[in-house]
Length: 437
Image 1 (cartoon, rainbow, N blue to C red):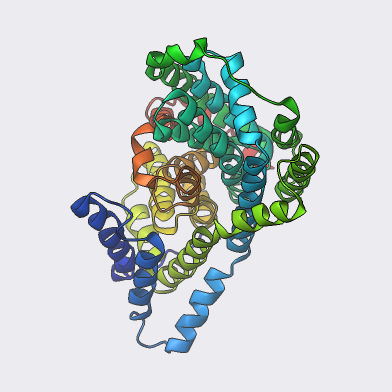
Image 2 (image 1 turned 30 degrees about the horizontal axis):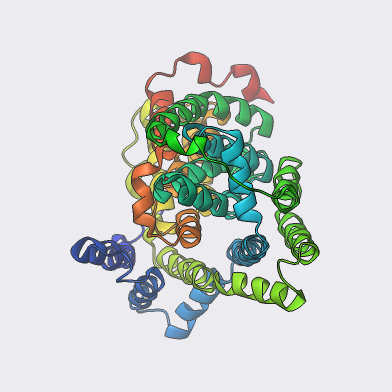
């Protein structure tokens, strides 16, 4: 049965405009993107959303806000933030970051460090299936590399985010991949193969670009750096566990415990120092956690008021051909991701309608699933109010906007996604034999 698209209400998108005006506008005007905290901007945006839908009571709309704020994916994300903050803090307190950075500097020439960090991020994110977890694990190392080499911290963090988005888009255990294949009715491995062919050129070009732009920092390779291998082990445990597909909570929890034991063994801190490090790391994630909760509530109100329905209607009403249908699906999931700042929610929302469009224009389900995942992920990796950039910026203590010029991989992934639609031939057509199952 075909899904009927409601026309929705374009005015329901006004709260998102209010947020962008406050957050981005104030940063452009003042030159300081910290002048307007994102959480304050989204709280005001949520308050504006409460003014819509006069036929509903304030209590009913507040319930919608609270349900969105407490949505399981949002709470899971918050818990990951807290665990990641604790691990990062404990590992840093016991000297793990310095030793890991110095070991990296001792092994690789500096012009390969950032490209190497990107490639490591690709492997970890594919194994973990979470971009936020990957960023939380690698960003502290990236900051340390920047401090020791003089490479701009925004450039190094941009490489980390790029590697994280590679796996967020491709990993078989990623929630975005699972959502994409379930809504389109194809196999995980088949979607992976098609998706991988589309984005591999973007990853290769990114690694080359990162190598080229860091060529001017060769001088640090001649210096000598001290490191303690035992203090590197907690990071190795997390990285190897990620590659083995260990659950992110088990992984970060084990990392905290192992880093704590190493810190106590090397006398980097006592038991109270360990507790203080855990507490400090968790506290450092409070603002980010609150922001995610507020964003979840505000987006739910926008959807409740008809904003998402309007986006669906506006895009689907303009589709006329097969290529137009593919671009329509790409535009659909892109706009929803920009509005929701959550690529999984964007895919789940756009997926059923994308399936109807794909069936009508005989688009291969593998291609549709790939389009949904690629375009939601490339935007998710560049929006300054998304969890990925907020996490990375929080660890690096810089504005998310400072990272934007160095997000090579998400931009190249977008170009590869466009090219896969423009230059695709009959290889992506649905075979008749597959339709008679």
